[in-house]
Image 1 (cartoon, protein in one colour):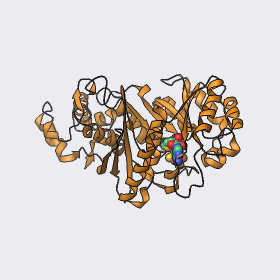
Image 2 (cartoon, rainbow, N blue to C red):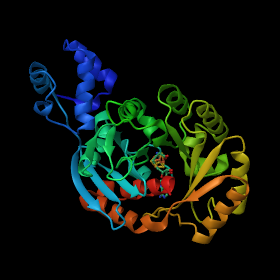
Image 3 (cartoon, helix red, strand yellow):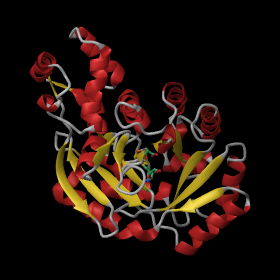
Image 4 (cartoon, rainbow, N blue to C red):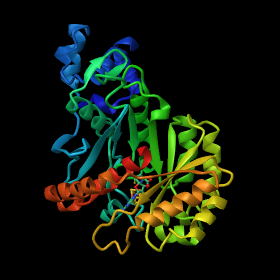
Length: 372
Ligand code: SAH
Ligand code: SF4
């Protein structure tokens, strides 16, 4: 059975033409699936009956199965999805005044093994399919009780309930490049979610050739996990740096900006006590990023068992942000409101399955960070 959530418009049009159907039929089906949240071919009333029958025979519209749905006191909502083989991934929605951000996972686990990351410590399970990636948005829209109106899913007051999507849940999006790009295309497609490129962000640990490909194929907003101002420290914290060192990464960021929908790259910087949070590190960062228009998001380290790291004290984070600001770099710090939620999030995943424990810590922290 084909899952139509696996298809972007081009792929769906190609399949429809194999069925002898016109491209506008594919656009119609996209609108039913993604704008109306429809998973029942019979409900697609303006689609010819004969086509509906064909679709029913060969295809389905199937999002990942929901394992848990939890709402925190600050309005943050978290879903745990089953992606088979005892794997689960998490999706998080953070509502804020005038904007709602959905943090989406791209892989079950992650192969890149960053020293400070709980997801990395799980190891790599597998890439999510297009349907599993876009299915998180599809289902979140439905579960948020979104009213569907022209132009997308609208909030009661202003704008959409999900106005922003960040690929910052579990996994390295650019290691699952083709599926992530197809899912991004559905997010941007006017016949589907119609999100602007500026409101969709891919976060990467810095896979240089894939950053270049993204620039060519689907340039959305870019966030780069930096976490260290020099190669020696970054090699240690993020093994991927041995393959793509800082010099190459900074050059890739500059190239990306030539095509990017925003005129800056967001650098994520996890603040780890005594490891990367001294004045000297701040000065080195300022020098490193001198030629790259950027903003910084400082993320106080989220502890997990046996990580061996400790979160930088609040005063240190503030001081560090001050040093960046004084040099003219915009630096925001993750709001503290999510701390208790992040803990709850990790517990939630742990209750369901041991392997996924702490995944929520990763995804939740991320969203707050970028959008604080
Ligand atoms: N793989 C991608 C996206 C997912 S991780 C990437 O690395 O960018 C999202 C963000 O959370 C990254 O910036 C990551 O470095 C950060 N992160 C991971 N573990 C963390 C922890 N324990 N505390 C704070 N931030 C963490
Ligand atoms: Fe993977 Fe990102 Fe975690 Fe590194 S920080 S292990 S790249 S998810």
